[in-house]
Image (cartoon, rainbow, N blue to C red):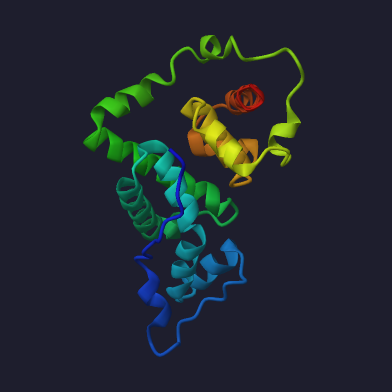
Length: 212
């Protein structure tokens, strides 16, 4: 199923217009700048963070639940948790990584409560991934052409939907959200070598699916 663009409701959006414009967040600021404004008492700065990252959070949640309504609920809950815990956030860290970690945990909690069968599958992982990939993986070097724009976006999106979620998530975080491997490892709470292995295998599987 291809992810569609969605219209989002920002639960913090009303903050931007409070007090006849006295609260205003400069959208040109980076995440750290907006957080500093929020710490200084400008609540509209958090609304700006939500507007900036809501599509990303929604898409990430959707990869876990494959349902638009559930993904929106998870996204909203994730931002509420981020808002409540922002005072604990270390501004030396990457805000996007911290937010995606919250989203992952929120999604897993949601699945555990409402979809226990799906949660049990996630706990078990994707099975024997090496066995699954055996018919596809070639011994050639990494297919850099897969992620260098040589394939149509629609074709790439379709191929991504056909690979195991463990690989799909790593590739999405790497190429859609531009996270570093250590940041992906932090979000997924996995060793960095595991993340790199999933990245390599995912690219190999993508290449074979798209060139079949």
